[in-house]
Image (cartoon, rainbow, N blue to C red; front, side, top):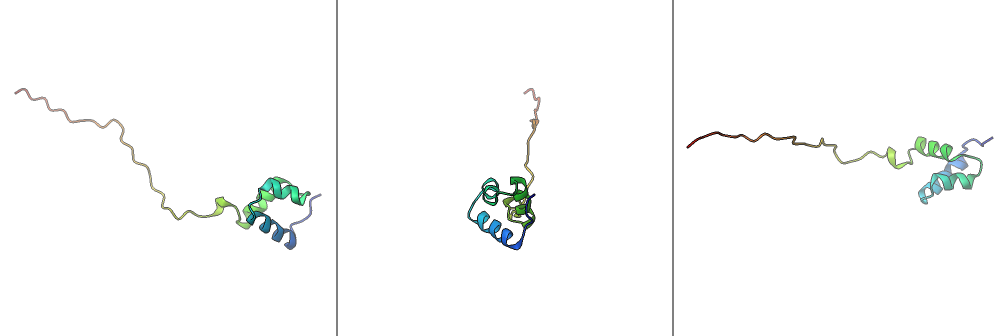
Length: 76
């Protein structure tokens, strides 16, 4: 059975994550937790890149579908 996330283990996790280790590598270092458990803890601690909010505004793309050209029928 895996050990609980003690304060020491959380500090070690934060240190390893800041060093750029992957979840797979961190799980291998701990030895008694799965990659998924490491990923879950990283997410709950807010250490993953996906939890950071983007500062760029979101804009909708603009499309131009089959713009009709005005055709004048003048016989001159």
